[in-house]
Length: 192
Image 1 (cartoon, rainbow, N blue to C red):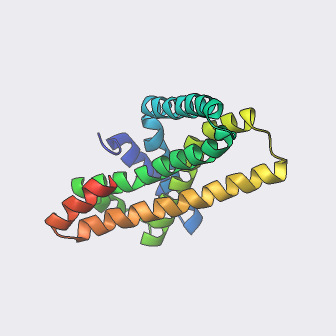
Image 2 (cartoon, helix red, strand yellow):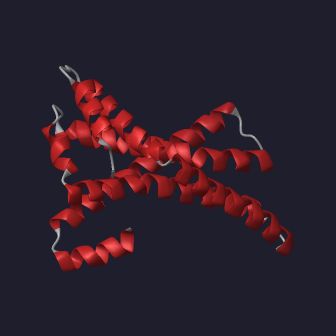
Image 3 (cartoon, helix red, strand yellow):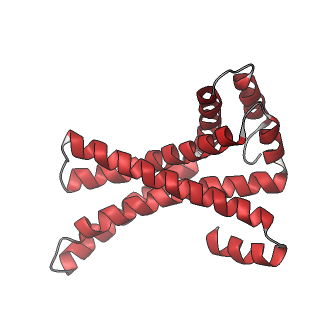
């Protein structure tokens, strides 16, 4: 089932139960979204390996063809592209949930909309980090290892970028729901 099975829906309702704070609701939404994200681990593994192969093959081959280190030029771009792809998937899921009516279930949970949105955007940030980490590790192995402070700054910047992209994707998914059919088809084919 897309995007979540009945068991994860029941689990999400059970996790929320009689909650008292906002952090509990956000954490439950993040855990739910990450469970859904990990359901497609074989697809993700294939996509990550494809990006790793692109990074290795193109970086090594083109470095020998040009007068500068092309791998240094290519590695940040491929890592950011992988981060973008993983973070943007949440917008696609929100769009599918809207089309299938699953969002009505989510809105019936004892959550405020702000908790739901913050949880979705936070989960999108974590998704981007999960997807981009193998690409980042490969780039660090081939180029050079940063200091711990630089590495922490890189992860923080990647997380913020991923959260921003997730927010944009969710906004586009909601805008698609609001727009009429002809506009929706044009935006949908452009973005997804």
